[in-house]
Length: 160
Image (cartoon, rainbow, N blue to C red; front, top):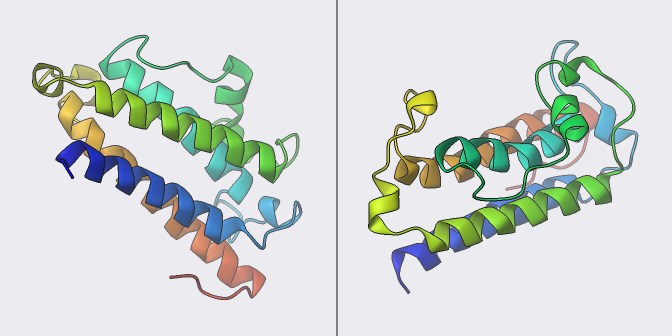
């Protein structure tokens, strides 16, 4: 197994972990906020689906397809205040899985020269394309932690 195969496995494991955290959520659960100013699971999943292309294309413009503009707006800070109009859980997870797989294919295609390219707009978060490769699964994990809080509010079992 090479490093890229290992990283691809990590991306896929994060996707499986996200799906496991949402497996027993119904559509109403997807819109529960653990606190008034916190985000609900529907927003988190859509945000993750859109973030792959937003971040990757910041570092390497046009590298992967972007979600539609309306979808992106609904899952940014502005859309985080909304409580309705979100896609069903299955559709959001499909968008996430498709975007995750596109990110994996992008990562597998990177050369060593690509990985050292700077990303000026992300320098405090992912200063190079190589850093971005490692940041993306961590971003998923951070949102899974927030979904774990929703699980606890709903009285669902702790996962992992």
